[in-house]
Length: 365
Image (tube, rainbow, N blue to C red):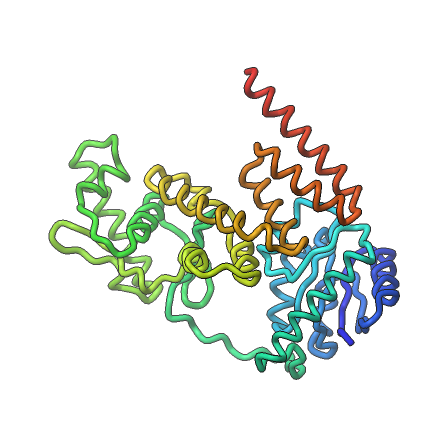
């Protein structure tokens, strides 16, 4: 029997899902809640294996709540329930086990439960049973990490050893850090640094700004406990990048591994956007294209082998990253229609027509 908790601000939605789970069988609903904050108070006691949670809720939405829920009961899996297809990719980014579109069909719910049973069986056979002891409400004190944590897929964010978001003194301080880290420990000549970061300034002005920015960056890193991260010698600067863990580094590792469903799911969760996408640094364009191409190629190679849940997530990621490719829409339409999700298929057709209309309008202009 799978122990489950349901969270939705709509009472009717809770009742419908509860009834469906009863009809499917094999699930014991331990609790139903209208707010994630309320569920958090009882999770230790209920110790669920599956948490079904609506994404669009007042106050704390499902995406935000998922992290808090999994921190409370890390052995659990989260299944998002939503009326909006566009949340599919974000669900996987938020470490969801699966997501269900409203109105939830019995067949689709059965597939989710079958996947969970398969995963639970694999965990048990490898000595990591999904049924773990109830956790005490008092969480163990977090041990500081030895490295800084850097996110560069989508927007750039740097976290210190206690998971606090670090702030930048100036935009150039941020770019200098990104530039040196981007070169992965390789020394960069001082004149090249000035050409890349201050291309239109006189040499003396660029040199002055470089020294000021370096001082600000070193002070920031020293305060975080890394006084020797920026090195200098023979007119060149470099960064000791072994003290930094990054999402891009993790993605590169996954791309080099032999693909399986677990690897693909991890890649879908990691890829929140293109490499330094929001910063749009010109010097990062080659790496941005390189990572994106490898990522799309890996997903594309796995697509024929994927189950229809992962296949849908891959195709929605394709549409997000390549919205002009009609083939992606058609492939996803086929998946949705084969599952009998005609409402979702019709909404996707509308989305495709809107994009094509906008694209043609832009071309005409």
